[in-house]
Image (spheres, rainbow, N blue to C red):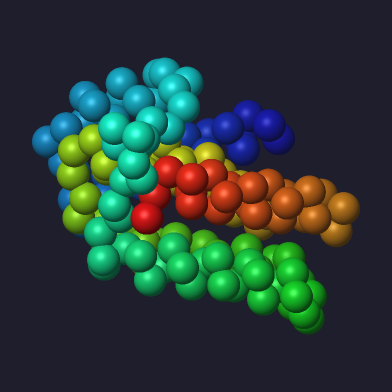
Length: 147
């Protein structure tokens, strides 16, 4: 079962990297390099990275969806996961970022996508709550490094 999950995660990461900007980009070597390193997200000379305007609404809406879930808890964690995945899909398809800011965003995005996938596969409410806590922490990391 873990083997299948690992393969699924690899496929998901590959799809994200290929779909960014709607097509394969010429900097695949740079993406591969990032996959092989466990590097923390860097700041832009001490400042937050700017995320392009096309992507910002999907990031903001995802966070609103998570906050609404926590406030009301009227939906299941599976519905939450589906809503977050839909926002992530739109985020990925709207990616036009390039260069260092793009690379740094992907350092945050890859683990974030994995958390949403884990939420979709959570086998209990206890597991889901732990993953939701990690998603909240993921958004905190996002806000520390991006604007």
